[in-house]
Amino acid sequence: WHHQYEFDQLNKPINKDDWEMTPQTYNAYYHPVMNEMVFPAAAFVIPGYKDSDLDEAMMYGYSGASFFGHEITHGFDDQGRLYGADGNLSNWWTSNDSASFAQRAKLIIEQFNSYEPVSGYHINGEATQGENIADLGGVEIGIDAFKKSKAYRDNNVIDGFTPIQRFFLGYALSWMYKTRPEALRSQLMTDVHSPARYRVNGPLGNIQDFYETYKVQETDSMYIPPEKRVKIW
Image (cartoon, rainbow, N blue to C red; front, side, top):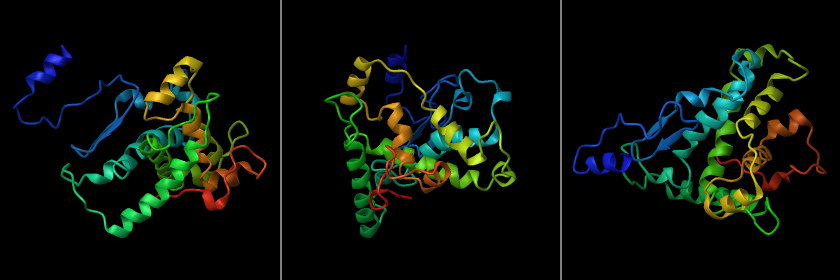
């Protein structure tokens, strides 16, 4: 029925109120042609957790960073930046901005190229750069928003975790997956998204607040030398 629905839209005006996901879909998206973000209701539910188990800090990390911040950043990643406000292809960046973006994106590509989730299979940093940029930008936007919140200012410790620690835990919860090696190999060859583990460890290795919060040292596996850390936005 969906294919028939798509065919029925031919030669008709675009319905900008039409969603590409159902409300119960556990996902979200940014559509550059529409210049819109869509967040189904399921994006605000953490599977296996009751509302009473969660606090504001965790939700800033979970929804603020991995959903809202992520999708906002898609408007300015390697693909989204090619579209203007009206959804048409438009070269609206200055040459200096484009060159600076490409230089920083190259660091993201190199970082993810170095990851080998399965022996003999590396992440394709070029193919996944848009999602990796959105993950990094999402964390940065989430932290910036969280630092303006009452939960951050109150600085209450819950279960031994500070607010900023709970923010990072909330972000990590959004990528808690169990994947078989066969599926992981398939993902590495076909998907524009990095495996879940690297959607957490990858961007957080570039975040200064993460280093300060968890006292990350040069001997730690997530440590990235300062000159190789990426900040695009």
